[in-house]
Length: 382
Ligand SMILES: *Cc1c(COP(=O)(O)O)cnc(C)c1O
Image 1 (spheres, rainbow, N blue to C red):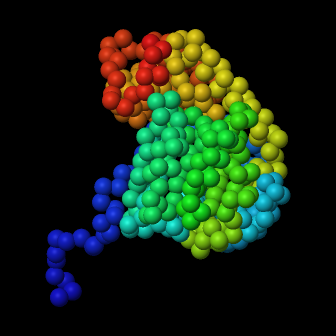
Image 2: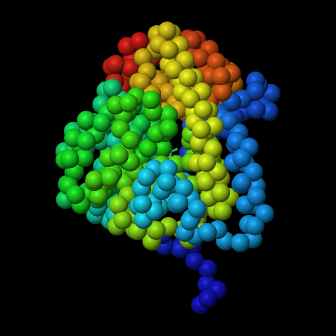
Image 3: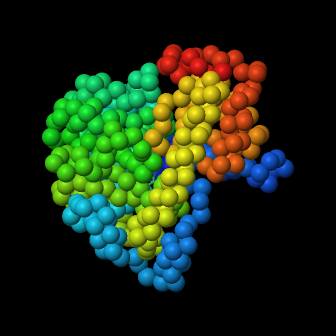
């Protein structure tokens, strides 16, 4: 009875029930009659593409009737040279979130466990749940840092993958070398540790290790990097992993065929070749970060030291109200209701608008702390 109507829907995997949808940072609210809006909600690079990078992307656009180079040959060669790693240890994907999802496909399924700090990058619970594996969320310390002892203690026979986000999104706090090495030494060789270093280029603290140095003699470490943040290619979707051969090979198997467009590949290659100019821009953003953090401290805020391109305000119950006040002032921030606000370091004018809003928090908000609020960040908050 082909035409019999039923009110049932196609059967979908139960693992999808209750998967939170990824919430992108809201765009700037320009054109709503209010002040010019700035988007400080997605940790993007505020600078438009560099001329050479834009030209190479545009040139690639003229042949988009063809599939891209599936092997990403030129990009792999450039990455291999730049990071001094064999091509066989590289894998690309549609953003580093794409690569993270491939890592889960390659390692975990129903009955398995995936450990990560919380709060951390909001893609982790989503992609873990979709894989069918179980999330084991280990609360951050009161200093907004990874609790690596608790994460090591959470490892069981079922653990397949551990995300370590360094610096951590959204708190900006980073893990130092000795602490991370001690943790890696405690993780069994059959458990994959993914060092998510989306913000590596913004790190200035020399004690924060470069994951690519740590992976070299550790076959169970995989480093994730992206062109979306410092390199300014968020809209092109290209990220990569550095890992020993079995893991890198598994990433090639789980990749969406032709997922990384030729435009993205060419722009990434051109970015690596224009690295000096790009990193000069990053230096400018780091200088702005220093200025914003100093000004917040002068205003009486206590914020975790950020080594990324954002700062974190643990506002608890005041989060939404502060976000709305910032909106009205002309900057769109990233609220995590009941917890805090993440503020991307943007153009100087945008940062100034945010700092002005931070100086005058809405007087009507009662500052009540939730049970998980760390005391340290509350103390100095106005
Ligand atoms: C932004 C971000 C990414 C990168 O996302 P893409 O998919 O490469 O755009 C990965 N991890 C963290 C922690 C991030 O904040």
